Image 1 (cartoon, rainbow, N blue to C red):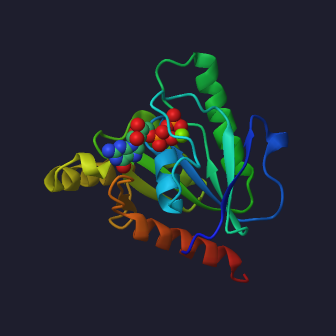
Image 2 (image 1 turned 135 degrees about the vertical axis):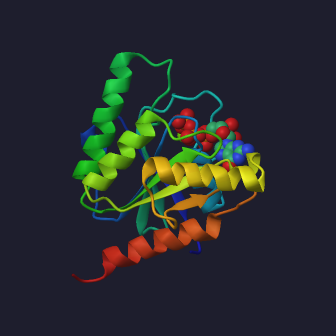
Length: 199
Ligand SMILES: Nc1nc2c(ncn2[C@@H]2O[C@H](COP(=O)(O)OP(=O)(O)OP(=O)(O)O)[C@@H](O)[C@H]2O)c(=O)[nH]1
Ligand SMILES: [Mg+2]
């Protein structure tokens, strides 16, 4: 995919603010600090378009980005940050499941897990929710540059076991080295193509 334009559209704090217009969307989901913003910036080749932070749990909004004037990247709030209140945790679930359930043109959910750790309970919940609601998904294991080649293989095996993902459903990614970039774009392109083909 050649990215010619990438624009921040808006941050939505409630449903009435979600981006309008009938465009396909690719959602980015995962626990807070897992590397969602970094992945988006790395895919788009733009530094700092999606804000990256060292203070996790800040972003409680849904952020919409318009790519090549033809589809959107959607940055969903991160889950599982221990220091947020119970109230914030519950609203997280509501915001995200409302978005996933209601968006008719959600063509792909990219679920990020940290390659250095076993998937968490929340990762498992999200994964099961996506599967039982028939949402096309791709699991991306982030921060792959922080592991040895062996460590990475082990971690991918483990994530597949826990999440019940097929062998080709988990992509190791590094937003530092660009590992996995081509592969993730290919999956996005395929999902967009499927959404455009007549039924
Ligand atoms: N080494 C390495 N560091 C990464 C990678 N991806 C993200 N990071 C770092 O991890 C931290 C969190 O990254 P973000 O992209 O802000 O994570 P996020 O999921 O958007 O976080 P929230 O929006 O706060 O939930 C930052 O310090 C990044 O520089 C990666 O592939 N490799
Ligand atoms: Mg972020």
